[in-house]
Amino acid sequence: MSITTVLSVDGMSCGHCERTVSAGLSALPGVTEVTADAPTGRVTVASARPLDEALLRSAVDEAGFTFVGRS
Image (tube, rainbow, N blue to C red; front, top):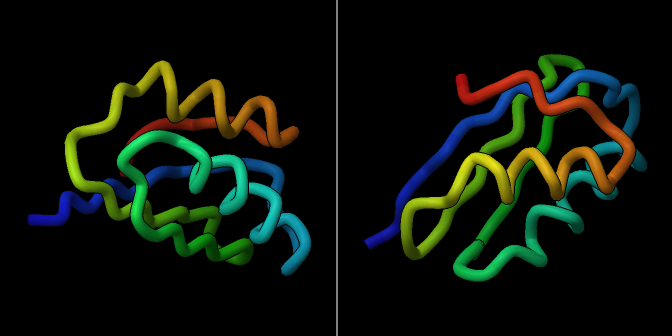
């Protein structure tokens, strides 16, 4: 079973930004797929189990962007 989490991320403006955020989130344990959309600021994360919000926030922050919250 896959769990889908949609995040709101501020600061993405291009494909490079999307790839950077996706790479950071993909490194989290249990994450199976990440799709980032810069124009909307939405990032969809598929995972094998629920993800801790602090881990999500940390991964986005470390990638250089602002975690706004879950959508």
